[in-house]
Image 1 (cartoon, one colour):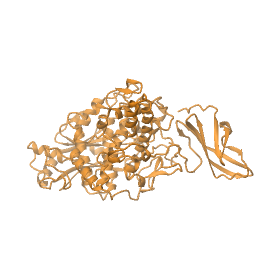
Image 2 (cartoon, rainbow, N blue to C red):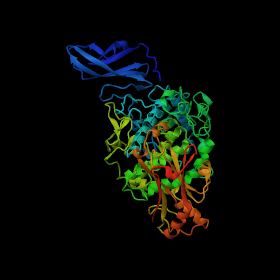
Image 3 (cartoon, rainbow, N blue to C red):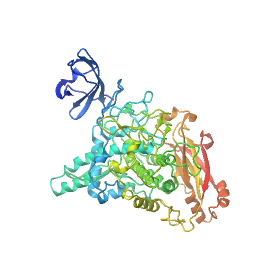
Image 4 (spheres, rainbow, N blue to C red):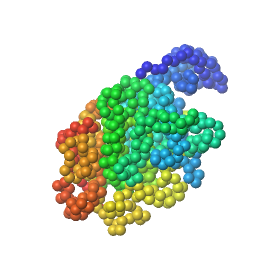
Length: 631
C-alpha cells in the first residue's frame, strides 16, 4: 500500500521545559546540533499532521561535542510504522484504559455488557451502537482506531500496530495468540481496545443530537454503553432460527440519527474496505473481496454472502454447541484445559474440549469459507467482536465458578508476531500490542483477571457478593445451557440436581493436527446412516456434532508438514443425542452394556474440506476419534 502523502508541516519538539518549532525536513537520520549543556537520554518528539501522528523520534544518541544524532525511528504508513532499527521501549499512541470509562451498572457497579438482543430493547443504546459501528467502519483506514487498523491486529496485513515490532522471523504473523493459555486473556485485552474506541465514538455521536432532552437521553445512554455479545449457545437462541437476522443478516437498517431518521448500510452485515489493498491479503480470493463475506457465492469480487446457509448450518448444530458450553462450565475446573485446544497428554478422557475449541467451531460456522473462517481475516467481519465478547463472557462465568485456577508457566506452542514458540509464557507475559500506560508497559494476564477492573460486568457476574455471584452464574448456566425438559435433568450443584443425582455422560473425542491437510477441514460425527452428499451433512438428522480446524490462511496451512503442526483436541457430547435415540426406542439406556455395542454399530465420522469435498478419514494424518464416558 502506498503511504499517505506527507505535506510540509510545522512540528513541535518538547524538551528542557521549552517548545521549539522545527520543520519536518529538518528531521531524519542526521546530526542535529544541540546545546552542549543538554544531557538527554530519551527524547520524545510527537510529529503531528492535523490530528494524526505521522512520525516519532524516540532515541537521542551520542551526546558528544555539543552534537547528538537524532534518529527518526518510524514514519507512519497506514497508521502503522515501518520496521525500526532501534530496540527501545515504545512510547504508545493508544493506551487501553477501559476501567476509566464512564457509566453505572446495577447498584452502582460498573456497566454491563448485554446480550445483543437485550441491547436492541434499549432503542437509544441500540441506535448509538449501530451509528458508532458505522462511523468506525468509515474512519480513514490509516487511523489507529479505525475498524481496519483494529481488525488488522489479529492477522493480516502483518504490520506493526502502534510501533510494536515483530520478533525476527515472525513478520508474517498476526499478534493474536492461539493454542495457548493466553488465548482468553489476549482476546480480553483486544476487546478492551475495541470497546474503548467504540465507546469514544459513541460519546461524540450522542453529543451531536439536538440540544435539550433528546441529547441528554442519548448522552446518558452513551455513558452506560458497553459492547454487546451474541450468545449463540443459549437455549434462548433455539427454535427454528438463530434470530441473528434481527441484527446482522439484513443489509440495511433504519436509524434515528442526530439529523433524523435515515436508512444506512447495516454495519453488522459486512465491513467494506475503503479501499481494498490487495497486497495486504496473501490469499486469493480475499485479495479480491471488496467487503467481508459469509458463505460467499464465489471467488470473485462480485461474490456476496449466503446468510441463509449460515442460518441453516447454525440451526442444525446449535444444540450440540450448547451441550459443549454446558459441559465446559460444569465439568472443567483446571484453567489450562479450559483455556485452549492444545493437546495435553495428562488430560482425562472426559476433558478434551476447551473454550478455544468451541470458539474455533463457531468461527467456521459463521464464516463458511468467508472471512470469519480464517485467523488472518476474521477480525474484519463485524460478527467477530460479537462472537469474541461471547467467548469472554463464558470465560468470566467460568472464573466465578473456578476462582483459584489461572495461568501457569509454560512454553509457547506456536509463533505470533511478538511470540516465539518455546519461550515461556506466564501471568506476566506482555499481551502485545495493548499498552497499559504511557510508559510503554503492556497489559498482562495478571491485570485482566477481574472484568470489573476493566470497567464492565456481565448480567450474571455483577453482584459484589461472591456467594450470590456464584449462585447467579449457576442458575444462568442451568437455565441457558442445561439439557431440555425432554431429557433427564443433568444440571450441576445442589441448586439444581437431578432426582437420582447420577447419569453417564458420553463424548466423542477428536484429536487432529491443526494443519493436518493443506486446507481447513471439518470432522462430522454421525449416530446412524449419513447422507452421501457432503453438502447435506450439516443438516443430516443423524448428525451428533462436528468440529473444524481454525487456521491462519490457506497459504500458511500449505507451508506446514502435519507432523510439525500442533495437535489440537475437541469433544463432541453424545449424551443428548443418545437420549433422543432412547426416546425413539432405538436404545434401551445410557449404560455401558447398552451404549457400547450400539455405538460400535452406529457411530461413524466423515471428513470434508470447507468446499464440501469429502476426504477419507484414514488419509488425514494424525486424526483420531475415540469414545469416552464417565458417571
